[in-house]
Length: 283
Image (cartoon, rainbow, N blue to C red):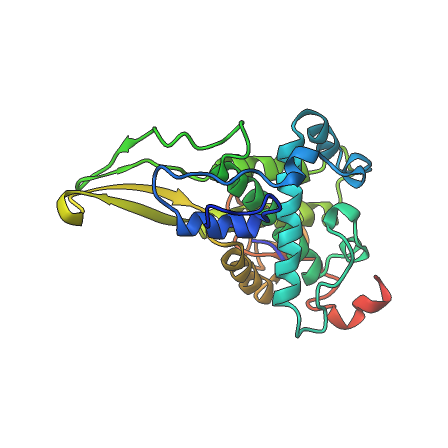
């Protein structure tokens, strides 16, 4: 870890959070999907088409615009969650835009920087996974006809919400290549990964019973993403317990390893353990 979405009559301006809530209420194996929101059919906005450092976003906007918009909307929803979780804190996540707009706080290895990276990465993965579950993306929409044998009278099947597809897309879009290596870039990479791991850590199982009179003699189960607020709660706890990056030679003595495949902590730099009081002068 790093410092580190129904009513059948629903508008086409459905947000990702609303779409997720709709899925939660209609989680049967075979469900009627809502039509995609207008944003997905309109494609990327000019701001996404002119990103300077996140070139993968630009490329995806050209080749798969609906996928890029889903990820971006997920990041925006994550920033709403950030403001909600931090509304009573000295730093209230009120910076304009998203990490794609490179807010000033990301120039420093603060606890808050780590939180933004992780929340944004998780938001992008969650946004794509939710769009997949709604059937809005041809690349990953749920067919609902694949099952894998389980034990004790149940099987894995139904819709798995395109979780892995969302995580993979988040990694490809937000991991920047070609930048000079530095401790700050290592922290960025680490915390982005922590956000993706948070999506996996908070997955929940959903099951549907089959049998006479609801006897549940057989069940069909599948994994799905938690609500974004739950993922945000998970990362907020990591934010509170974030650890300091002590440097390449001292990290193991501090109790963590940047090379771990499963990050256990959000990480910040040696500059500060909590820079909320000094952020105003740097934003």
